Structures are given as structure tokens and as C-alpha cells.
Length: 236
Ligand code: ADP
Ligand code: UDP
Image (tube, rainbow, N blue to C red; front, side, top):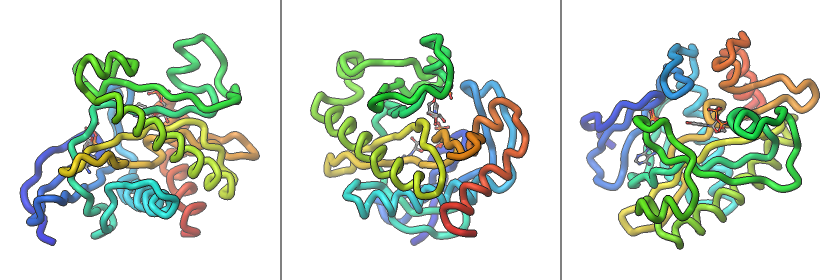
């Protein structure tokens, strides 16, 4: 597998072409941003942790029947993934109120929902990733009705698998963001990453935040929280 030219540098990862036209290499960085890029910083060792954690979660999900872009980890920070065209929707599942949900609807954080919720944001940095519904997504031709149905089913399945798994690690899965992509064959698969950058993870006993909210809210011990999640996942 040969790493060719860089296609894209995002806020948290770089994406490279390879000598296989169906595969990309993603390279995870330590850079952290919040509030649509307004707050910038670095979290030492984050790239390594997010790479390992994403691959760990994707392999677990594959075993449970969820197709993902994961192919092979190359190094601490680099992974080979299936090339997809990303559906420009951030798919957010919530089990407990937090973050923008609590703010938008004027409720406290920590309300446990009777059933999980799903919402979409239009992935567009210039517009600040606005909240969008299924009909808007179809009107904008971001996805078809069938694709949206598939994405919803897969996202709830991911939630069931992840919630049960984190429970065994004494972690509460509060909410998370997923991205899906379409392969050259038109199949929808799970892409991007699953990490403390994209999930809210609370210690089950103490409620301690073990995710990017420590960075967003200047809570301190950011690196330690990422390391703690990795330790619970891998024992290392
Ligand atoms: P952002 O673009 O939000 O700054 P990142 O820094 O994580 O985010 O950049 C990674 C980019 O790669 C994202 O735009 C993501 O949608 C995209 N991506 C993730 N997985 C794949 C994949 N398998 N194929 C193509 N693009 C992908
Ligand atoms: N999230 C993300 N990327 C985004 C926005 C949200 O990974 O661009 C994740 C976030 O980490 C949290 C969940 O999606 O786990 C819900 O985030 P929320 O809508 O509460 O937004 P926030 O106010 O945290 O940006």
C-alpha cells in the first residue's frame, strides 16, 4: 500500500490517496477545535488514541453486522479506509440530554431519555453545520429517502452496540456523531471516526466527563481523560 498525495486536511485528520483507487489513508492529528473552529488547541496524543479507538469500535461494529470503512491500521496515527463519498450529514444520536440539545430546548444536562433520539446537521462549515430534517436533506439532494432510512437504521444499531459495550467499561454513552459514506457501488457504510472527539462519555459511577467536553469547557485533565478511555477499551 503506497501513500500518495494529500487530498484534504481537516480539523482533526488528513486524508491521502493511495495506489489503490478504492482506498484512502487517514492520518489522525492532535489538533482540537470546538465551536465551529472558534476555539483551537492541541491535545497531546489525541491522534494516536482516536485512531486506535475508532478502529477498535469499527471492528466491534463489523462483528455486529454494521458495515464500516475500516480496512487496516498502518501505524499509530494512520489507517487504510475504503474511499467513500461522504453523505454531508452529521448524524447525532442522543441517549441523555447534553450540549446543544440542552441549550436549544432549555433543559438540564443528564436527563435520561425513554428512547434514543436522532437528528441531522448539514455538514457545511460556512453555514455552521445547521440542524436539518429529512425533508430538507432530500430537497437539497444530500441523500435519497432510501439512503436516509438506511442511515437511521444503522445509526440506531450502532447506538445499541456501543451503549452495551461502553456499559461493560463502566462508561455511559450520552451522545455521539456519526458520518456515513457511499462506496463506488452505491452502498452506504459507516465512515469517519468514533472517538472522545465525537462521543460524550461519562464515568458510570462518578459522572466524570471522559471526552472532548473537557477541552470545550476548559475542565482540565483533557489528555488524561482520553488516556482513561483508551485504557478501558484496550487495557493499555
Ligand atoms: P473536518 O472535515 O470536519 O475538519 P476531519 O479533520 O476529521 O474533519 O477530516 C476528515 C475528512 O475526511 C472529513 O471531511 C470526513 O468526512 C472525511 N472522511 C472520513 N472518512 C472518509 C472516507 N472513508 N472516505 C472519504 N472521506 C472520508
Ligand atoms: N459532535 C461532533 N462533531 C460536531 C458536532 C457534534 O462530533 O461537529 C458530537 C459531540 O461530540 C457530541 C454529539 O455530537 O458527542 C452531540 O453534540 P451537540 O449537538 O451537543 O453539539 P456540541 O454543542 O457539543 O458541539
